[in-house]
Length: 183
Image (tube, rainbow, N blue to C red; front, side, top):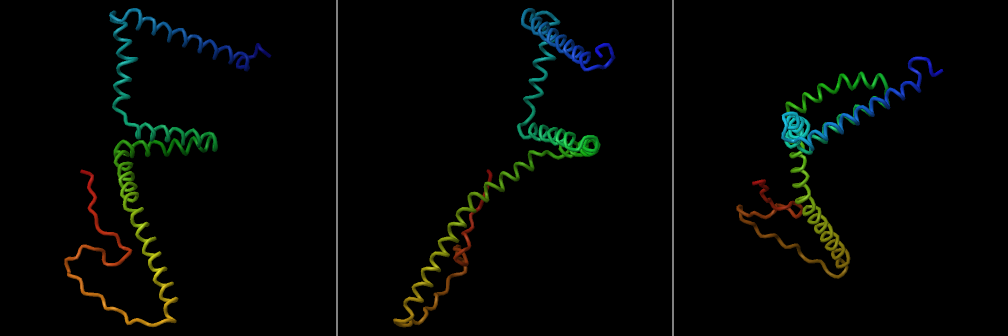
């Protein structure tokens, strides 16, 4: 069975030979870059294999890199899960997503989400604490009223009118206005 073209043993030998050749070429390239850095070939290899990719990677942001990795992972998952249909669907979907990502900076969207989360985190806990305190105060006053009703009834006091330029909240559960600025 080893004499048939395309048999598993023959394919393994071809793949191993290519991998060995790739390893030899990589070591030879590294030897030229390290051993002869001042020659035109050494400078050219260093420029195209080290400096150009490093400059390209320096221009990339973490979020954009994560976006592209996620896009590739989604494609791989679609191909693994749905085989040929997944490859067709991903092939139709990926160019549109890539075009959208290049035309509209995804970083702006991520920044907007982070700012919204920060505002919610800072004011959200404060509002929740104020609401819990107001609820506890209402419960305490309700319990005191029901417990004290049997003893005597007090006439309700009228609240004094507040001036119109008052900056306090209109009702107990509303937080005071605080301006938020990123500057």
